[in-house]
Image 1 (cartoon, rainbow, N blue to C red):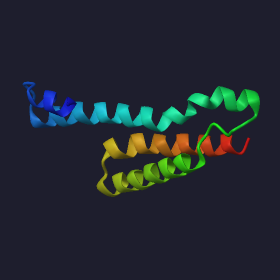
Image 2 (cartoon, rainbow, N blue to C red; image 1 turned 180 degrees about the horizontal axis):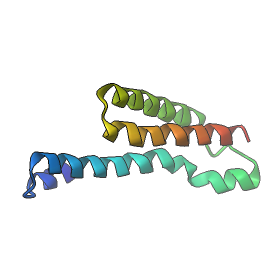
Image 3 (cartoon, rainbow, N blue to C red; image 1 turned 90 degrees about the vertical axis):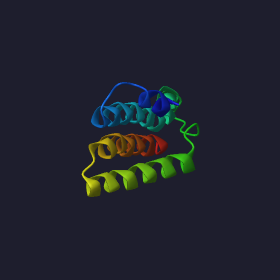
Image 4 (cartoon, helix red, strand yellow; image 1 turned 180 degrees about the vertical axis):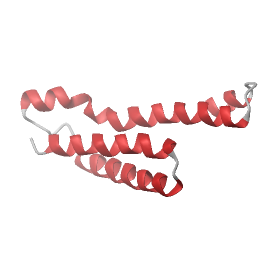
Length: 98
């Protein structure tokens, strides 16, 4: 829906790509960070069962592959949010060990 709305704005192609890229990057950053909402519970209770192992693994793998793809294309719209996803996935893996 956002892309449809952006297409009606009086912007040139580069500006539309920038607005779309930023909005999608914000969305994917929240997606990768969402499992960390239980961080307080994990640390306080010393119980990491609230972090779903397979979701954590697949999210981190997805972020890693898209980050590497971004390096291949030299596209920071892929590198930055997916690098953040890899970092947050590593934090989740560390917490899973608690």
